[in-house]
Image 1 (tube, helix red, strand yellow):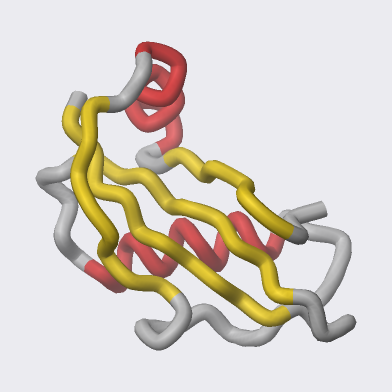
Image 2: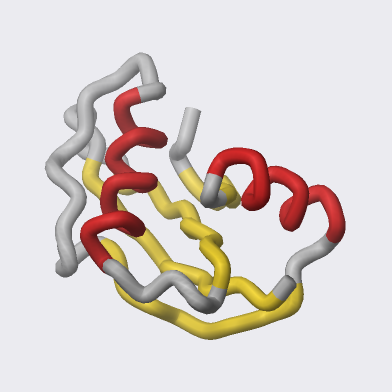
Length: 87
């Protein structure tokens, strides 16, 4: 599956900046839906963050997804890759 990678940075309440990628099918272009996935992910965290918006989340590139990522996207609609300060 080809996926779009949305590079995302969101400031946490403690001042650290979270960096994560939101992966979605390349056919999905509705930013409201993509940002909704990011907001759902942020709501699952035990700490508070700033609001996710177009300033924090930008399309980066497309790539082929590994099998596990494809399976998760097929089940949930998206996949998150945690990069920095996500826990």
